[in-house]
Length: 292
Image 1 (tube, rainbow, N blue to C red):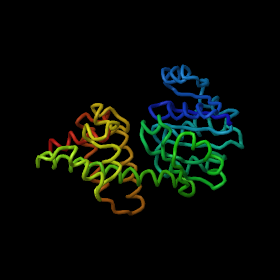
Image 2: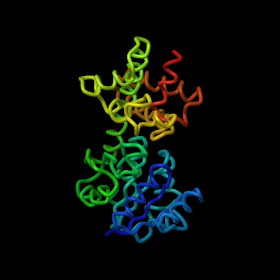
Image 3: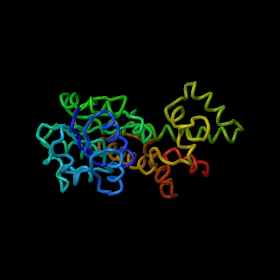
Image 4: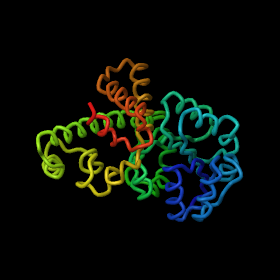
């Protein structure tokens, strides 16, 4: 079993760290929010005095942070995690950030560093069923894979540094557009007098099926575990989806890719945020679409 430092104990990071401990690893944790650190300590994780202290002496160091500037500061800036870590440690950043920052931090860390953003939301983090998209060297991936397996069920090596972030941005752009048209399908069904359950029973067994339909259905009833049954309490907040769509559009513009549906998805999610929906699950955008 490994000695692991874990920094970033938000809605995703906290259950991920707990799953590492459940797998038998020795986990030292840190978060700048005292309540998050206290909750982790109550769950049996070892609190560290700082991010650098969490990294010091660990064989593997993991971060799950909000944005690129936080990742850069934690590893290379005042957080000092890269310098504090052992030269032989494997560093893993599970945050979703821009590709350029992921590559910059990996190059400057002078360590074996991987970008490993996740898909699966809070439910996946709690159940240890996340999908990891990993960028970095093959030797680094081989060392990190057993650690990631304690937190997820699908781990894919996508290529060199930054490739994990590239895959995540593409995935979430696809997911956002799929959720939007799934919501539109239910809205049309409502207007045509078709019940939610009838549409779900047909589409979930037909060519229109998707994860957005079968696992994360945006209306209450057909999928008991979906956020729609909890007044859209977030598994994956709309504000985070908008952030990822913004990163995807930034990458599209930088690479010259034509992504009109991705751009439209960003526009719609920004409208949802402007209407106060940022704290709701991203599937809650059906409420905005119903209003026209």
